[in-house]
Image (cartoon, rainbow, N blue to C red):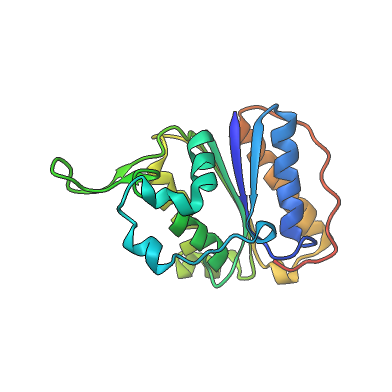
Length: 214
């Protein structure tokens, strides 16, 4: 099992960091090889530059600005996202990672003479995990359409192997969370990670972070 964990949060003391730590602990206990992309800590630039846009279809030169990230997405068979939901969607940092890393001839193949639409390019990935927090309620998030979740589970998921294993957990009403609700969410994350791995992997829950912010 080769897991790429894409983590997106500006504060190292956030509750999202506790979720990340639990995900990493589960993977470690399962004996997985793990690579972590901590987007804020690494200073990843989410901006697709004009030069990148103009060379977007120039494969494989389009990979040069993000060569290490592309190598990791080609290496993994398990892809996990840990992030806060802001304005019902993905943080700009994470959306920019998708824009710059999931490139033509990497994540998908463009239409050509024999194909009228894009084709998936991440068929080697057979597990997808999505773990997030939401300030809004579950009901309001559903009414708006859950654009962040849909982007990852449906949009990115379409590119993976068919019938890939999935895991998802969201803590709604995060701004009104309590120590009890946060611990309950960590238990949900733990159960979903066991589902993603395919077997129970016992690990202690990480100590709850003091910040309740998303």
